[in-house]
Image (cartoon, rainbow, N blue to C red; front, side, top):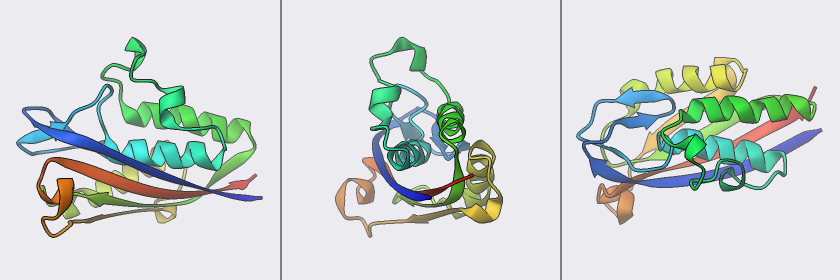
Length: 158
């Protein structure tokens, strides 16, 4: 059986916070605001996986009102979600994700992101694709107010 899930997330950029995307800390003058580490890419991936499992969304399982998730690594949350994938008899088929950010330039970090996500997804690097784009200075991403990410995941029965 093949199942597909779609995820989206966006966070506001705030000066002085660390910028973590795809489990990788990226040098930048601003980071993403959020309850956990605000890893926008990993949050989109989590939402996509939860969607493929038909289990709702990230906010139902990791609410921002729960102090247990304050500052937590989003990669650790993804590992927990992958335990649900195995429990339900599935494994990752593939991930395709896009980060939308005007700055910083993310190309030098994409391979590290793919590796971190592949490890958490219990998958090979060739099953994980991450790309980045700008919006040509349009919208909140283009005006450098925030960063967004989209993810599509397919899982297959084992």
